[in-house]
Image 1 (cartoon, one colour):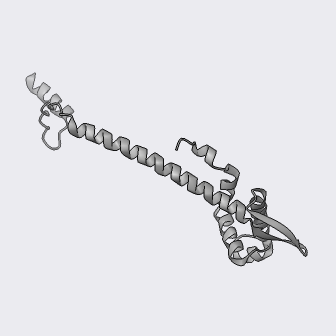
Image 2 (cartoon, rainbow, N blue to C red; image 1 turned 90 degrees about the horizontal axis):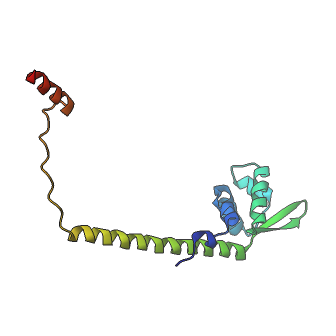
Image 3 (cartoon, rainbow, N blue to C red; image 1 turned 90 degrees about the vertical axis):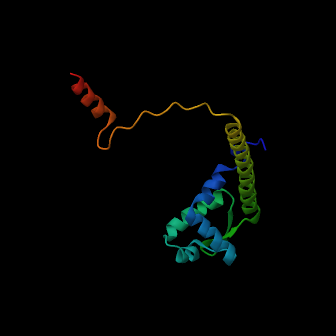
Length: 147
C-alpha cells in the first residue's frame, strides 16, 4: 500500500475521538440512544459546561447531531460518521501492518546476510589490568618503575 498515512485520516475527526472524555461520551450516547449535556454530566466526572464543550467538538466533526428538546439539545451519534472514523482506523492499521511486514523482511535479509558472510578474524584483546586498577593507573605505575 503506497498511500501515505496522512492521506488516510481526518485529523479533526481523530483529535475529537482522541480525547478519553469524548470517547466515553460517545459510548454513553450509543448505549442510551442519545442524551443531553445534563444527562451526560450526571454520568461523567466533569461539569455540565465541560460536557457541553465536548459535545460542541463532537458536533463540529459530525460525530453527533443535535436536535432541540425543550430548553436543551438532545445529541445522538451519527452512525455514518462513526463508521467513517472506524474505516479510517482500520485503514491506518492495515497500512502499519504492511510497513511492519516490510521492516521485518528487511531485518531478516540483513540477518541472513550476516549469518552467511564469513566474519573476519578478530585481533586478540589486550590483557585486562588487575582488579582495582584501570589501564590508566597501570600505565602510570609502569612508567614510574621504568624511571
